[in-house]
Length: 273
Ligand code: URA
Image (cartoon, rainbow, N blue to C red; front, side, top):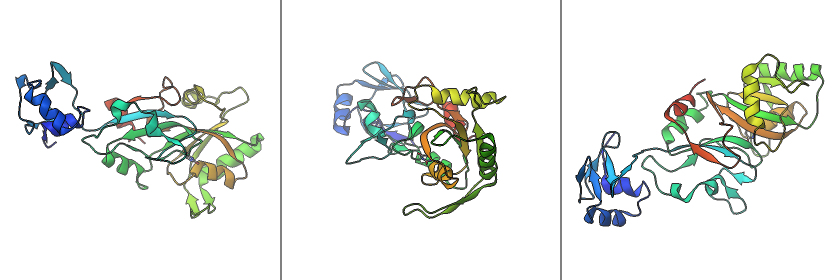
């Protein structure tokens, strides 16, 4: 990793403007690897140097990775004239510039979709995980308008497993939907012998404002994909919550509308297939 100027690093860690940082340096409040530094242009190695302000250690970070449990009625956009955005849910302390880049959503969820949303400054990771070639699995808990017989459920599974054509919607072209995996919740509220599905489903239920009938895993991310898949087979999605991306499950301890930073191993889990 290339070294960065001290004033740039501190400005990007919420210590005000570069001018403010210059003042901190001139007051001898900044120390690098145990030595006071007064030159704001001093180069700092983010991965190995140790920086303290007024005796307090600063955790140096190039990128930020946040797991948010998105609630309904907020949009995945930087600004919206009508609705609050997911960025409005963040603490003021996160509303500064980051060394790695701008904080952005790793993919979008619709305004009425809940669940796992990653916010990050790591544009490279976002690009690679959202690339159509990557096929990162995404699992959703889905509630449907129409209840179905066992035979109908079986039919949906067959259609989804094979892949099928999805019609054009608004200005979005139709497309050949890739094979996906559908698991139904039984009358007893369980997923048969499938313990993993059971656990995932419980994560969806926790703090949910709706009920799910099935779990759907897709390997692509087209516009309104899940809603269009069920609409194509004659049903309608009335509740949607993303609960897993790659190998990373939504932490059920995160309340709707709340978030926390990802651990290093969780960041790696995002790329698991
Ligand atoms: N599919 C949808 O239809 N909506 C979402 O928000 C996510 C996937």
